[in-house]
Length: 308
Image (tube, rainbow, N blue to C red; front, side, top):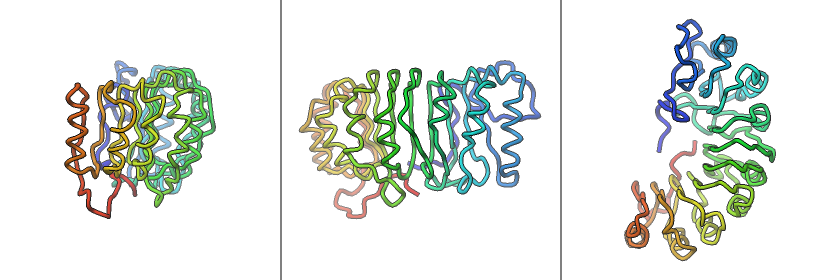
């Protein structure tokens, strides 16, 4: 997988670029507003556009926001403080994407984030939060009663962020997606760091779990084999990583996965016999199984899909 184009939809809404000089939209709540800058405009243009949206007469109707390149994002942290300060002007905000950039704007490992804990405190009605990039990313354990979807995309997710997610109280969370990445880019989390998440204790509503783009996915598969949360999942996504036959065997030897609606393993290094075993056990009972983008299982130079 490559992050080579901007999303066209977010949180169920079409994405529209905000223009401070554009016409007043007929339905400000009908799209996800994208705010970003370009190479020539830099941080100054981003600030003009962000201020323009926040000061619009209809800002209080905005339900979804996509923050793209904010100007030298490789060196400047995400505009978290500005978004927190503007919470009273965005009372309807339900969905936020922080760092929606393509690889030709910023490689994923270059995107500088910050502490996203204040965002969750400032927006208690937020339902969807997606963060791309993990340089400087921080999170403290929180309780948030409305968050339904949390996605953190990275080329290397720090263990302290993974642990903070596991220690948070998120009673409404239905979808959790973590790109653990590789140690070469700061991904130092272990399968043990995922244990509070896999227990499911603080995530009673979770039905969709993604541990993606993961260098240690074989160890994660072993942990999933007996994880309590698996029994109530509908979707399990272990794609974009370096899953081998050892991980595939762990999935087959563990608790049944036949209740899943979908198991996504695409971009893997499974052998043909292992793929046949997975298909025979799961597809035969109606599980949607994605085994596409198979790498050479004998290749010692295995790689995750998104790193730098």
